[in-house]
Amino acid sequence: MPRPEPRTSTDVTGKMRVLVVDDEADIRELLDMTLARMGLACDCAASVAEARQWLQEKQYSLCLTDMRMPDGDGLELVRHIEAQCPSLPVAVITAHGSTENAVAAFKAGAFDYLAKPVSLAQLRTLVKSALALPASASALTTAQRGPELFGSSAPMAQVRALIGKVARSEAPIYISGESGSGKELAARLIHRESVRGDKLFVAVNCGAIPENLMESEFFGYRKGAFTGAEAEREGFFQAANGGTLFLDEVADLPLAMQVKLLRAIQEKHVRQVGATAEEPVNVRIMCATHQNLRELVEAGKFRQDLFFRINVIEIHMPALRECSADVPDLAQRVLKRLAVGLGVPPPVMTRQALATLREYAFPGNVRELENILERALALHGGGVIDVGDLQLQPQQPQKVGAGETADMGKLPLQDFLDEQERAVILDALQKTRFNRTAAARILGVTFRSLRYRMERLGLNDPPD
Image (cartoon, rainbow, N blue to C red; front, side, top):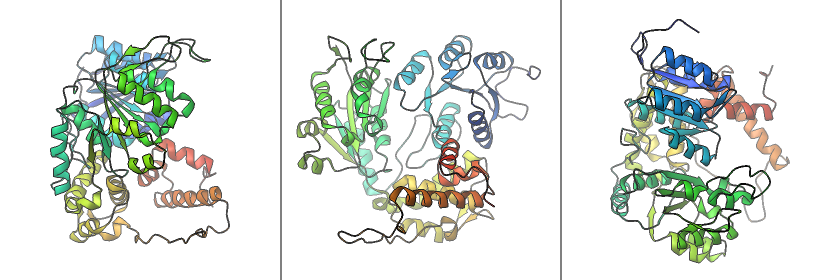
């Protein structure tokens, strides 16, 4: 351990200092590089004990800690910081989908949490919010108040006005729109502006929960309720009590779970798995899906009574192609945010590049725009991004007639998909001279995700 320095939350160059605590070397390296590109100094610890030693020797502007370490857990460190360094914001890195860990982290004093695998975009947003760094936006602008919807087009102005109105009510909200159009962002804005704004906002991806675990995930369970239930656990409803429960991709819920969800919403009571009595809960329900719920109701795949219960007020998020007038300014903001995250000067976009983006249909909406610009930022040269740097493909989807399939070279479907994925990853690796971190950035995936995919596809060693 280096010799103690004067206790200041900036280093000798004036950079803010962040403490990263994680027992996985790859994660520490990834976070260290990302924070360095944001202009931040970083110290890394592989255990709770090492983290405590750093805290004795230095002051920090932010701490990012994993939940589980060899000699303890992140909550222990959060409580220590809360007691010894109450002005130091702490964010916890927790396992994906582990709601009980997130709630426990908030109760211990954490201001936010990140789910593994760590999304660099979410990390940058969290860090900027914690440190009040200069921030611009994608479909949102991150400032001290949090995310904002961006855009001056008529569709976006209508959405903002509607959000302002419904935030004052307690009515259930249904948010429709394509993937990547900002449905969760709208839900978070409604929550923030409501009387529940100082309570928890719990977001749940209904499509990511195994069917056999849904009841225990939503309503919690008692100790001994089933094999492996070694302690009592809260569900999503209990975690969001007093605040807002956002059910994303609600159309993915099976019919049996829809019945139980309807009862919980109507009765405002839930029963934990293994319990004999119900308990009251006070949550505001917001739901979203990219699917057409009305068509699913007509097809018998979604309960009509639940649809009417959650669809008291509907907000439709417009697709990016419906707000084409916003695209040039939005692209400039996204590009500036990405450049700030990498610690590089933002390049200039030519008029032709901006015009090309405005005319593009963006089937992936804002997420696709971010990916396009992140790739262009990595590959451009000379401080200028032109049309060629965007690498937009002509949008001419192949038409397949009834009873026909597109030619896949006579390969089984999985083999065909693996070949496509292998080719895309190899292309990114070759462009970055097999720098996996840079390749992951081009592909829009995390370093860990890229490593897993490479192992699965047998791409661990550079080809001859």
